Image 1 (cartoon, rainbow, N blue to C red):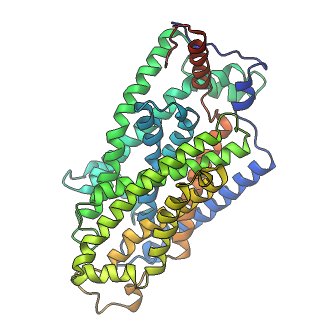
Image 2 (image 1 turned 60 degrees about the vertical axis):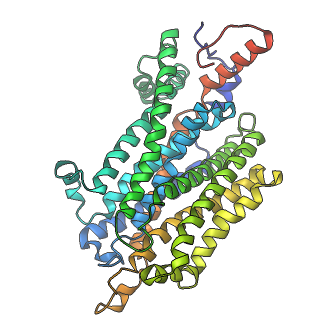
Image 3 (image 1 turned 180 degrees about the horizontal axis):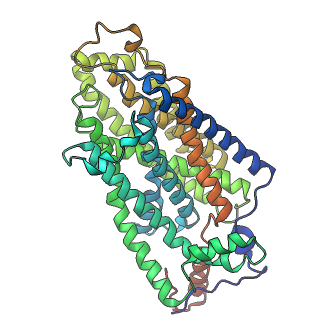
Length: 451
Protein backbone atom coordinates (compact mmCIF):
# COMPACT_ATOMS: atom_id res chain seq x y z
CA UNK A 1 0.00 0.00 0.00
CA UNK A 2 1.14 3.50 -0.76
CA UNK A 3 0.15 6.89 0.60
CA UNK A 4 -1.47 9.32 -1.81
CA UNK A 5 1.11 11.64 -3.37
CA UNK A 6 -0.11 15.02 -4.61
CA UNK A 7 2.22 16.90 -6.95
CA UNK A 8 2.60 20.45 -5.72
CA UNK A 9 3.26 22.17 -9.04
CA UNK A 10 1.38 23.98 -11.77
CA UNK A 11 1.01 20.79 -13.80
CA UNK A 12 -1.47 19.46 -11.25
CA UNK A 13 -4.85 20.57 -12.59
CA UNK A 14 -6.52 19.76 -9.26
CA UNK A 15 -4.48 22.49 -7.57
CA UNK A 16 -5.32 24.92 -10.35
CA UNK A 17 -9.04 24.13 -10.26
CA UNK A 18 -9.75 23.45 -6.58
CA UNK A 19 -7.42 25.60 -4.49
CA UNK A 20 -9.14 28.52 -2.73
CA UNK A 21 -9.06 31.83 -4.60
CA UNK A 22 -9.25 35.49 -3.68
CA UNK A 23 -12.59 37.24 -3.79
CA UNK A 24 -13.27 39.22 -6.93
CA UNK A 25 -15.59 42.25 -7.09
CA UNK A 26 -18.67 40.01 -6.90
CA UNK A 27 -17.29 38.17 -3.89
CA UNK A 28 -16.48 41.38 -2.02
CA UNK A 29 -19.92 42.78 -2.82
CA UNK A 30 -21.52 39.57 -1.53
CA UNK A 31 -19.52 39.67 1.72
CA UNK A 32 -20.36 43.35 2.15
CA UNK A 33 -24.06 42.61 1.72
CA UNK A 34 -23.97 39.80 4.29
CA UNK A 35 -22.09 42.00 6.78
CA UNK A 36 -24.66 44.78 6.31
CA UNK A 37 -27.51 42.37 7.08
CA UNK A 38 -25.62 41.11 10.15
CA UNK A 39 -24.97 44.67 11.39
CA UNK A 40 -28.66 45.55 11.07
CA UNK A 41 -29.50 42.35 12.97
CA UNK A 42 -26.97 43.25 15.67
CA UNK A 43 -28.63 46.68 16.11
CA UNK A 44 -32.03 44.98 16.42
CA UNK A 45 -30.65 42.53 18.98
CA UNK A 46 -29.15 45.41 20.96
CA UNK A 47 -32.63 46.95 21.11
CA UNK A 48 -34.04 43.61 22.26
CA UNK A 49 -31.41 43.35 25.01
CA UNK A 50 -32.04 46.92 26.08
CA UNK A 51 -35.85 46.92 26.10
CA UNK A 52 -36.58 43.20 26.48
CA UNK A 53 -38.70 40.85 24.40
CA UNK A 54 -41.46 43.46 24.35
CA UNK A 55 -39.87 44.76 21.13
CA UNK A 56 -41.01 41.50 19.52
CA UNK A 57 -44.64 40.57 18.92
CA UNK A 58 -44.34 37.54 21.21
CA UNK A 59 -46.78 37.63 24.11
CA UNK A 60 -48.26 35.21 26.65
CA UNK A 61 -49.91 33.04 23.99
CA UNK A 62 -47.43 33.29 21.11
CA UNK A 63 -44.41 32.78 23.33
CA UNK A 64 -42.47 31.19 20.45
CA UNK A 65 -42.19 33.23 17.29
CA UNK A 66 -40.06 33.13 14.17
CA UNK A 67 -36.95 32.62 16.33
CA UNK A 68 -38.05 29.06 17.12
CA UNK A 69 -39.25 28.56 13.53
CA UNK A 70 -35.77 29.59 12.43
CA UNK A 71 -34.17 27.28 14.99
CA UNK A 72 -36.09 24.25 13.71
CA UNK A 73 -35.20 25.25 10.13
CA UNK A 74 -31.48 25.39 10.93
CA UNK A 75 -31.62 22.02 12.67
CA UNK A 76 -33.34 20.60 9.58
CA UNK A 77 -30.75 21.96 7.16
CA UNK A 78 -27.93 20.63 9.35
CA UNK A 79 -29.00 17.05 8.68
CA UNK A 80 -27.56 17.33 5.15
CA UNK A 81 -24.13 16.54 6.61
CA UNK A 82 -25.24 13.11 7.73
CA UNK A 83 -27.25 12.53 4.54
CA UNK A 84 -24.36 13.10 2.11
CA UNK A 85 -21.29 12.40 4.25
CA UNK A 86 -22.56 9.41 6.18
CA UNK A 87 -25.59 7.71 4.64
CA UNK A 88 -24.33 7.95 1.04
CA UNK A 89 -20.87 6.84 2.19
CA UNK A 90 -22.19 3.85 4.10
CA UNK A 91 -24.28 2.84 1.08
CA UNK A 92 -21.12 3.12 -1.07
CA UNK A 93 -22.44 5.83 -3.41
CA UNK A 94 -19.35 6.84 -5.41
CA UNK A 95 -20.66 10.10 -6.95
CA UNK A 96 -20.97 11.78 -3.54
CA UNK A 97 -17.26 12.80 -3.34
CA UNK A 98 -17.49 16.35 -4.81
CA UNK A 99 -20.53 17.07 -2.62
CA UNK A 100 -19.25 15.87 0.73
CA UNK A 101 -17.37 18.95 1.90
CA UNK A 102 -20.11 21.30 0.70
CA UNK A 103 -22.70 19.40 2.72
CA UNK A 104 -20.46 19.25 5.80
CA UNK A 105 -19.85 23.00 5.91
CA UNK A 106 -23.59 23.64 5.43
CA UNK A 107 -24.23 21.33 8.37
CA UNK A 108 -21.70 23.08 10.63
CA UNK A 109 -22.91 26.57 9.68
CA UNK A 110 -26.55 25.59 10.24
CA UNK A 111 -26.07 23.89 13.60
CA UNK A 112 -23.94 26.83 14.80
CA UNK A 113 -26.73 29.31 14.20
CA UNK A 114 -29.35 26.91 15.51
CA UNK A 115 -27.58 27.22 18.87
CA UNK A 116 -27.16 30.99 18.54
CA UNK A 117 -30.81 31.63 17.68
CA UNK A 118 -31.89 29.79 20.85
CA UNK A 119 -29.81 32.24 22.91
CA UNK A 120 -31.40 35.12 20.99
CA UNK A 121 -34.85 33.78 21.88
CA UNK A 122 -34.07 33.91 25.58
CA UNK A 123 -35.18 37.00 27.44
CA UNK A 124 -32.16 36.69 29.72
CA UNK A 125 -29.25 35.31 27.65
CA UNK A 126 -26.94 35.87 30.61
CA UNK A 127 -28.70 32.91 32.25
CA UNK A 128 -27.97 30.49 29.41
CA UNK A 129 -25.37 28.75 31.54
CA UNK A 130 -28.17 27.76 33.95
CA UNK A 131 -29.14 25.07 31.44
CA UNK A 132 -25.85 23.31 32.11
CA UNK A 133 -25.69 23.95 35.86
CA UNK A 134 -29.33 23.61 36.92
CA UNK A 135 -30.81 21.67 34.01
CA UNK A 136 -33.14 18.77 34.81
CA UNK A 137 -32.85 15.65 32.67
CA UNK A 138 -36.66 15.32 32.76
CA UNK A 139 -36.92 18.42 30.57
CA UNK A 140 -37.03 17.94 26.77
CA UNK A 141 -35.22 21.28 26.46
CA UNK A 142 -32.17 19.78 28.16
CA UNK A 143 -32.38 16.79 25.81
CA UNK A 144 -32.17 19.22 22.91
CA UNK A 145 -29.15 20.99 24.40
CA UNK A 146 -27.36 17.64 24.79
CA UNK A 147 -28.01 16.35 21.27
CA UNK A 148 -27.27 19.69 19.58
CA UNK A 149 -23.96 20.03 21.44
CA UNK A 150 -23.00 16.45 20.58
CA UNK A 151 -24.05 16.79 16.94
CA UNK A 152 -22.11 20.05 16.63
CA UNK A 153 -18.91 18.41 17.89
CA UNK A 154 -19.28 15.35 15.62
CA UNK A 155 -20.15 17.53 12.60
CA UNK A 156 -17.04 19.67 13.17
CA UNK A 157 -14.89 16.53 13.37
CA UNK A 158 -16.51 15.14 10.23
CA UNK A 159 -15.60 18.38 8.46
CA UNK A 160 -12.13 18.87 9.94
CA UNK A 161 -10.57 15.39 9.87
CA UNK A 162 -11.05 14.79 6.10
CA UNK A 163 -9.83 18.35 5.55
CA UNK A 164 -6.39 17.72 7.09
CA UNK A 165 -4.59 16.54 3.90
CA UNK A 166 -5.94 19.51 1.94
CA UNK A 167 -4.92 21.95 4.69
CA UNK A 168 -1.42 20.52 4.35
CA UNK A 169 -1.58 21.12 0.59
CA UNK A 170 -2.56 24.75 1.26
CA UNK A 171 0.32 25.00 3.75
CA UNK A 172 2.86 23.63 1.29
CA UNK A 173 1.68 25.74 -1.65
CA UNK A 174 1.41 29.03 0.23
CA UNK A 175 5.00 30.36 0.40
CA UNK A 176 3.97 33.52 -1.45
CA UNK A 177 0.92 34.01 0.75
CA UNK A 178 0.84 36.39 3.74
CA UNK A 179 2.76 35.08 6.72
CA UNK A 180 -0.38 34.82 8.86
CA UNK A 181 -1.97 32.48 6.33
CA UNK A 182 1.09 30.23 6.26
CA UNK A 183 1.02 30.03 10.07
CA UNK A 184 -2.75 29.50 10.01
CA UNK A 185 -2.48 26.49 7.69
CA UNK A 186 0.54 25.12 9.57
CA UNK A 187 -1.36 25.25 12.85
CA UNK A 188 -4.47 23.57 11.45
CA UNK A 189 -2.54 20.88 9.54
CA UNK A 190 -1.41 19.26 12.82
CA UNK A 191 1.95 18.20 11.36
CA UNK A 192 0.32 16.26 8.53
CA UNK A 193 2.98 14.57 6.39
CA UNK A 194 0.86 12.25 4.26
CA UNK A 195 2.31 8.98 5.54
CA UNK A 196 0.59 5.62 5.08
CA UNK A 197 -0.13 5.46 8.79
CA UNK A 198 -1.78 8.91 8.78
CA UNK A 199 -4.00 7.98 5.83
CA UNK A 200 -4.99 4.74 7.56
CA UNK A 201 -5.95 6.70 10.70
CA UNK A 202 -7.91 9.30 8.75
CA UNK A 203 -9.96 6.68 6.88
CA UNK A 204 -10.71 4.77 10.06
CA UNK A 205 -11.79 8.01 11.76
CA UNK A 206 -14.06 8.95 8.86
CA UNK A 207 -15.71 5.52 8.93
CA UNK A 208 -16.30 5.69 12.69
CA UNK A 209 -17.74 9.21 12.46
CA UNK A 210 -19.95 8.24 9.51
CA UNK A 211 -21.49 5.46 11.58
CA UNK A 212 -21.79 7.66 14.67
CA UNK A 213 -23.36 10.68 12.99
CA UNK A 214 -26.37 8.82 11.53
CA UNK A 215 -28.11 8.01 14.84
CA UNK A 216 -27.09 11.44 16.14
CA UNK A 217 -28.67 13.12 13.13
CA UNK A 218 -31.87 11.13 13.53
CA UNK A 219 -31.80 11.82 17.26
CA UNK A 220 -31.33 15.58 17.01
CA UNK A 221 -34.45 16.15 14.95
CA UNK A 222 -36.48 13.57 16.82
CA UNK A 223 -35.62 15.25 20.11
CA UNK A 224 -36.41 18.64 18.57
CA UNK A 225 -39.84 17.28 17.62
CA UNK A 226 -40.33 16.17 21.22
CA UNK A 227 -40.12 19.82 22.32
CA UNK A 228 -43.45 20.16 20.55
CA UNK A 229 -44.97 16.67 20.85
CA UNK A 230 -44.54 16.46 24.64
CA UNK A 231 -46.64 19.62 24.94
CA UNK A 232 -50.38 18.94 25.05
CA UNK A 233 -51.48 21.27 22.25
CA UNK A 234 -53.59 20.90 19.13
CA UNK A 235 -51.28 20.36 16.16
CA UNK A 236 -48.39 19.16 18.30
CA UNK A 237 -49.93 16.28 20.24
CA UNK A 238 -48.81 13.65 17.75
CA UNK A 239 -46.75 10.46 17.90
CA UNK A 240 -45.98 11.07 14.20
CA UNK A 241 -43.87 14.15 14.91
CA UNK A 242 -40.47 12.39 15.17
CA UNK A 243 -40.39 10.77 11.69
CA UNK A 244 -42.35 13.75 10.32
CA UNK A 245 -39.57 16.13 11.39
CA UNK A 246 -36.79 13.80 10.23
CA UNK A 247 -38.34 13.35 6.77
CA UNK A 248 -38.79 17.11 6.36
CA UNK A 249 -35.23 17.74 7.53
CA UNK A 250 -33.71 15.39 4.97
CA UNK A 251 -35.79 16.98 2.21
CA UNK A 252 -34.78 20.53 3.18
CA UNK A 253 -31.13 19.53 3.65
CA UNK A 254 -30.93 17.87 0.24
CA UNK A 255 -32.43 20.96 -1.40
CA UNK A 256 -29.97 23.17 0.49
CA UNK A 257 -26.92 21.28 -0.78
CA UNK A 258 -28.28 21.41 -4.35
CA UNK A 259 -28.68 25.21 -4.17
CA UNK A 260 -25.22 25.84 -2.69
CA UNK A 261 -23.58 23.35 -5.06
CA UNK A 262 -25.13 25.07 -8.09
CA UNK A 263 -23.85 28.50 -7.02
CA UNK A 264 -20.31 27.26 -6.25
CA UNK A 265 -20.17 25.20 -9.45
CA UNK A 266 -20.98 28.23 -11.60
CA UNK A 267 -18.96 30.80 -9.67
CA UNK A 268 -15.77 28.70 -9.47
CA UNK A 269 -16.22 26.90 -12.80
CA UNK A 270 -16.30 23.41 -11.31
CA UNK A 271 -18.30 21.76 -14.10
CA UNK A 272 -15.47 19.27 -14.62
CA UNK A 273 -15.97 17.91 -11.11
CA UNK A 274 -19.65 18.61 -10.42
CA UNK A 275 -21.38 17.37 -13.54
CA UNK A 276 -24.97 17.19 -14.74
CA UNK A 277 -24.99 13.61 -13.50
CA UNK A 278 -24.54 14.84 -9.93
CA UNK A 279 -27.58 17.09 -10.25
CA UNK A 280 -29.54 14.27 -11.87
CA UNK A 281 -28.74 11.94 -8.97
CA UNK A 282 -29.48 14.62 -6.38
CA UNK A 283 -32.78 15.29 -8.15
CA UNK A 284 -33.75 11.63 -7.88
CA UNK A 285 -32.80 11.68 -4.21
CA UNK A 286 -34.85 14.84 -3.63
CA UNK A 287 -37.89 13.23 -5.31
CA UNK A 288 -37.62 10.23 -3.00
CA UNK A 289 -37.28 12.42 0.10
CA UNK A 290 -40.17 14.65 -1.01
CA UNK A 291 -42.43 11.63 -1.53
CA UNK A 292 -41.56 10.34 1.95
CA UNK A 293 -42.26 13.77 3.42
CA UNK A 294 -45.54 13.98 1.49
CA UNK A 295 -46.61 10.70 3.09
CA UNK A 296 -45.93 12.01 6.59
CA UNK A 297 -47.76 15.27 5.80
CA UNK A 298 -50.84 13.34 4.72
CA UNK A 299 -50.59 11.20 7.84
CA UNK A 300 -50.11 14.26 10.04
CA UNK A 301 -53.22 16.08 8.81
CA UNK A 302 -55.53 13.26 7.75
CA UNK A 303 -56.05 11.66 11.18
CA UNK A 304 -57.01 14.82 13.12
CA UNK A 305 -58.78 16.15 10.01
CA UNK A 306 -61.04 13.08 9.95
CA UNK A 307 -62.18 13.88 13.50
CA UNK A 308 -62.19 17.70 13.29
CA UNK A 309 -63.05 17.99 16.98
CA UNK A 310 -62.86 21.06 19.23
CA UNK A 311 -59.49 22.83 19.17
CA UNK A 312 -57.97 20.43 16.62
CA UNK A 313 -60.76 21.35 14.23
CA UNK A 314 -60.20 25.07 14.77
CA UNK A 315 -56.48 24.66 14.20
CA UNK A 316 -56.92 22.71 10.97
CA UNK A 317 -59.62 25.11 9.77
CA UNK A 318 -57.17 28.02 10.15
CA UNK A 319 -54.65 26.09 8.03
CA UNK A 320 -57.00 24.73 5.34
CA UNK A 321 -59.50 27.56 4.92
CA UNK A 322 -58.68 30.27 7.42
CA UNK A 323 -56.14 33.06 7.77
CA UNK A 324 -53.14 30.75 7.23
CA UNK A 325 -54.61 28.92 4.22
CA UNK A 326 -52.76 30.93 1.50
CA UNK A 327 -49.40 30.26 3.18
CA UNK A 328 -50.25 26.64 4.00
CA UNK A 329 -51.29 25.68 0.45
CA UNK A 330 -48.39 27.64 -1.06
CA UNK A 331 -45.96 25.62 1.06
CA UNK A 332 -47.60 22.32 0.12
CA UNK A 333 -47.82 23.09 -3.60
CA UNK A 334 -44.57 24.96 -4.28
CA UNK A 335 -42.43 23.35 -1.57
CA UNK A 336 -43.40 19.74 -2.12
CA UNK A 337 -45.93 18.81 -4.83
CA UNK A 338 -44.49 20.94 -7.65
CA UNK A 339 -40.88 19.79 -6.98
CA UNK A 340 -42.02 16.16 -7.16
CA UNK A 341 -43.75 16.74 -10.51
CA UNK A 342 -40.83 18.67 -12.03
CA UNK A 343 -38.08 16.36 -10.82
CA UNK A 344 -39.79 13.21 -12.07
CA UNK A 345 -38.75 14.30 -15.56
CA UNK A 346 -35.10 14.20 -16.66
CA UNK A 347 -35.21 17.78 -18.02
CA UNK A 348 -36.34 18.95 -14.60
CA UNK A 349 -33.16 17.51 -13.10
CA UNK A 350 -30.87 19.70 -15.22
CA UNK A 351 -28.75 22.14 -13.14
CA UNK A 352 -30.85 25.32 -13.60
CA UNK A 353 -34.34 23.79 -13.17
CA UNK A 354 -33.27 21.76 -10.15
CA UNK A 355 -31.65 24.88 -8.63
CA UNK A 356 -34.95 26.78 -8.93
CA UNK A 357 -36.85 23.82 -7.49
CA UNK A 358 -34.38 23.53 -4.58
CA UNK A 359 -34.84 27.22 -3.74
CA UNK A 360 -38.61 26.66 -3.65
CA UNK A 361 -38.11 23.68 -1.33
CA UNK A 362 -35.79 25.60 1.04
CA UNK A 363 -38.10 28.64 1.21
CA UNK A 364 -41.08 26.34 1.65
CA UNK A 365 -39.23 24.50 4.43
CA UNK A 366 -38.71 27.74 6.38
CA UNK A 367 -42.36 28.74 6.12
CA UNK A 368 -43.41 25.18 6.94
CA UNK A 369 -41.64 25.59 10.30
CA UNK A 370 -43.48 28.88 10.75
CA UNK A 371 -46.78 27.04 10.24
CA UNK A 372 -45.79 24.34 12.72
CA UNK A 373 -45.06 26.87 15.47
CA UNK A 374 -47.40 29.87 15.19
CA UNK A 375 -50.95 28.62 14.40
CA UNK A 376 -50.80 26.04 17.21
CA UNK A 377 -49.84 28.68 19.78
CA UNK A 378 -52.79 30.83 18.67
CA UNK A 379 -55.21 27.92 19.27
CA UNK A 380 -54.77 26.93 22.95
CA UNK A 381 -57.25 24.63 24.69
CA UNK A 382 -58.28 27.44 27.01
CA UNK A 383 -59.85 30.15 24.80
CA UNK A 384 -58.02 33.45 24.47
CA UNK A 385 -60.19 35.99 26.32
CA UNK A 386 -59.96 39.20 28.33
CA UNK A 387 -56.65 40.13 26.69
CA UNK A 388 -55.72 42.89 24.22
CA UNK A 389 -56.81 42.22 20.63
CA UNK A 390 -53.19 42.22 19.46
CA UNK A 391 -52.56 39.06 21.52
CA UNK A 392 -54.95 37.15 19.25
CA UNK A 393 -52.54 37.56 16.32
CA UNK A 394 -48.82 37.34 15.72
CA UNK A 395 -47.02 39.58 13.24
CA UNK A 396 -43.20 39.60 13.64
CA UNK A 397 -41.70 43.05 14.25
CA UNK A 398 -38.84 44.49 12.24
CA UNK A 399 -36.46 43.51 15.05
CA UNK A 400 -37.49 39.87 14.71
CA UNK A 401 -37.13 39.91 10.93
CA UNK A 402 -33.77 41.70 11.17
CA UNK A 403 -32.34 39.23 13.70
CA UNK A 404 -33.68 36.24 11.75
CA UNK A 405 -32.23 37.59 8.50
CA UNK A 406 -28.90 38.20 10.25
CA UNK A 407 -28.77 34.57 11.39
CA UNK A 408 -29.34 33.37 7.83
CA UNK A 409 -26.70 35.81 6.58
CA UNK A 410 -24.30 34.59 9.26
CA UNK A 411 -24.65 30.98 8.11
CA UNK A 412 -24.01 32.04 4.51
CA UNK A 413 -20.99 34.09 5.64
CA UNK A 414 -19.45 31.03 7.32
CA UNK A 415 -19.81 29.09 4.06
CA UNK A 416 -18.37 32.03 2.09
CA UNK A 417 -15.31 32.41 4.33
CA UNK A 418 -14.71 28.67 4.30
CA UNK A 419 -14.70 28.63 0.49
CA UNK A 420 -12.21 31.49 0.53
CA UNK A 421 -9.78 29.64 2.83
CA UNK A 422 -10.10 25.95 1.96
CA UNK A 423 -10.70 23.73 -1.10
CA UNK A 424 -14.45 23.19 -1.38
CA UNK A 425 -13.90 19.84 -3.14
CA UNK A 426 -11.49 17.39 -1.53
CA UNK A 427 -8.23 17.33 -3.50
CA UNK A 428 -6.85 14.18 -1.89
CA UNK A 429 -10.09 12.19 -2.23
CA UNK A 430 -10.43 13.22 -5.87
CA UNK A 431 -6.80 12.18 -6.44
CA UNK A 432 -7.48 8.90 -4.68
CA UNK A 433 -10.48 8.19 -6.92
CA UNK A 434 -8.39 8.79 -10.05
CA UNK A 435 -5.60 6.54 -8.78
CA UNK A 436 -8.03 3.73 -7.99
CA UNK A 437 -9.79 4.14 -11.35
CA UNK A 438 -6.43 3.97 -13.15
CA UNK A 439 -5.40 0.91 -11.15
CA UNK A 440 -8.69 -0.80 -12.04
CA UNK A 441 -8.31 -0.04 -15.75
CA UNK A 442 -4.73 -1.33 -15.87
CA UNK A 443 -5.56 -4.43 -13.87
CA UNK A 444 -3.27 -3.37 -11.02
CA UNK A 445 -4.50 -4.97 -7.80
CA UNK A 446 -2.84 -2.31 -5.61
CA UNK A 447 -5.41 -0.82 -3.25
CA UNK A 448 -4.89 2.77 -2.18
CA UNK A 449 -6.21 3.99 1.13
CA UNK A 450 -9.91 4.77 0.92
CA UNK A 451 -10.55 2.40 -1.96
